[in-house]
Image 1: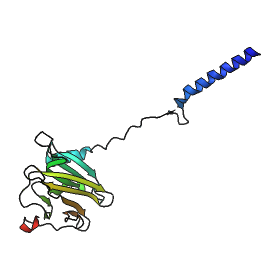
Image 2: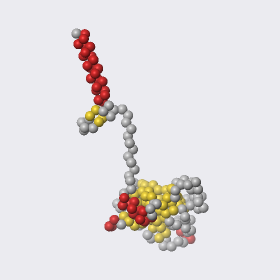
Image 3: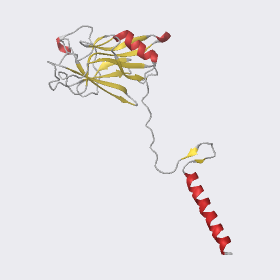
Image 4: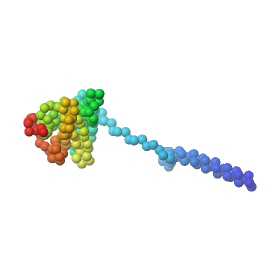
Length: 206
C-alpha cells in the first residue's frame, strides 16, 4: 500500500511539472501560444511615407527633400504633405530645432497631380500672394515647428533666422483657413487670420 501511495504521489508531481512547463507556452483555443509572465511588447513602427508622395516631394523640391508630415493635414478630406529642405546639423549649425531653407505644403488634385498650396522660401506665400507678417527682406533660413490638431488640422510656425540665429524673433503662425480655403498667416495671438498681399509692402512685415 505504501508503495502504491508513493507511486501515485510521484505521478502527481510529474503531472504538475508537465502542466507548469506547458503553461509557459500552451496552445490557446485559436491555435497560438499563450505566454505567461511579463512580455516585452514591441512599439508600432511609424508609418512610412507612401512612394507616390515621396516621388512628388523629390520632383518638386529635389532629391534631398524630407517629407515631415502627410495625410489629411487641413481636415478637408484631401491628401496633403509637408516637405522641406532641412539643413543638416554641423558644428557651425547648432541652432536647436528643424532648420530649413525651403518648405512647402503640397496638395493632391484631380488626376493624382500635386500642387504647392503653401511655399516657404525667401518669403511665405500661397497661391494668392505673400502672407501677412512675412519679412520684406528675403530670408535665407527658417526654424520650422508644426503641430496637428484633430479639429483645426496642421499649424505651422516659421521663425526667420537673422544672422544665423533666431534672435528672439516671434514665429509666424500659418494655418488652413476653412473660409478662404487656403493657408494664411495668423496674427500675434494666433487666433485671427491675416489677408495676403499680391506684392511685398512695408505694412506687411512687423
